[in-house]
Image (cartoon, rainbow, N blue to C red; front, side):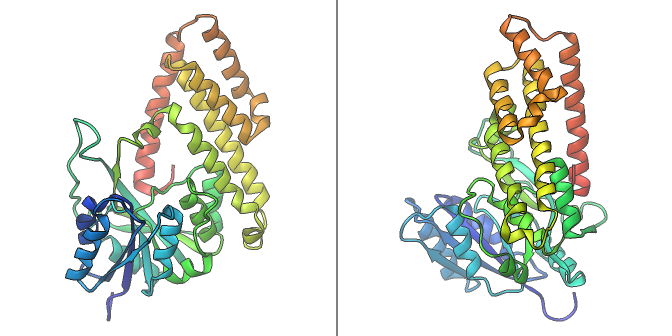
Length: 359
């Protein structure tokens, strides 16, 4: 970058996470190649989070604090912080997550070079919260560069089509940096989608702007808590699948239809993918000798999202497997082998996602 450093504001919503604020704010203000600012929005935390936030702000005039008198929920907290941004670029970072060294500069350089890009993401690095379990990991300290730094740019509609084909988001959250002009055009987070607001917001952004990814270095560190570790288990995926379907349906809403005329087709594609995933997870639960009730719930979710999926081969296969379990049958060698092969495929997809941002 030549000339003045671009301004980037990190909006940090906080509710009872005051113990993480020093690290979260320090990771932003330590970015040397941008003019970094922080807005902490405390959502009426009952602990000392607001006092911690005000202490940090008193020590550095680059930090501002917005304090809610009453708890408003995380969507309102996001929107209040984003509305106060005045810099050219913005990122929304949870108080318990961390921006990686150099991440904001890499994202800003990309958007300065590519004027049609409204949103940049990258590689997140997960780590287990120190209070989550006995074998918790320390906070990672990734090198600023992990091999060669490159970037990929997708036309917004291309990225939406890929997301719908997989029926999932390719982004965790803290690794996203947006152009503030794009954020203003897209508007606030949707309060009606508290559990899938991020995905819905990125779809709305991609409807009007191109999407890019920084490849190579880690862009953010995502803290995994005991409360959300269950999402790695099949049984914990039911609500995630339901809320994903709601997020994708925004593509057929009046607000997005003008920018994405093929929205209905894309929604149908996403619903098929989500239903297919629900049925696959149900089959995997049964093949590994897991909970048949969890498999039944996943089967019901598939029907809620796309009723016709239950009549297809995979839906009929789950019904047959449930009947065998109800009759006392246990998974045989073929079932266990199939599940083992699927786990290997999961590792391949994980590696692909880490390197190229899609899976």
